[in-house]
Image: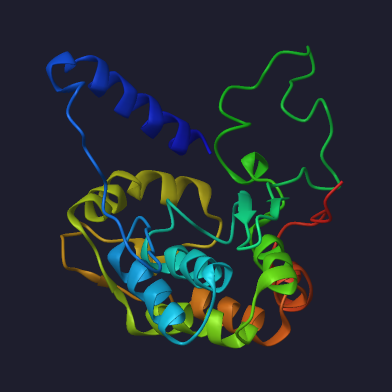
Length: 241
């Protein structure tokens, strides 16, 4: 949500700095039936394919969400959360809140030392900075309320992406290079597939374990993520308060 707010503010600042263009009529791209917009072209293509299969906007959004978890995890991932605002054809409006929640073992003093002082970076870096993810639960709920295509058909494209691999863009290659030290510092299990001396644009990364997780979500819905093998592999206390 912070990214969206920043983008809107940035656009507003640019507009203010160009008063000579204030009276010009600038229109974005218009479509007569439907449109899919996302932070990565591969995810956008998947959303379009879902619409061509007869899916509705919610079906496309769900498929794009899971695809972004593979192609552009900074913009959409199964380890975070979010909101969905819906307006149906008949004018009905609704909203879903699936932001992260604090783990069951969280406490008000978990980021403080014995003297009550804030421990630097503890709330922003490492596993204690994470909440219980809400993205998967949100997609499951959205599909239950508004989806039309089978659930498995919305998750499978992301699985295919993860197995076949995704070519990195310039920006993603830079991100992977910049985060190398953090990856080593904060992971107790070394993720060898993320470690490389120098990532370059067009390098391909395959997300094998993510594909396996997505397969469990495809086959078991919410339980495939919050229960069973996934739950066992994560830190205790993962039930939201």
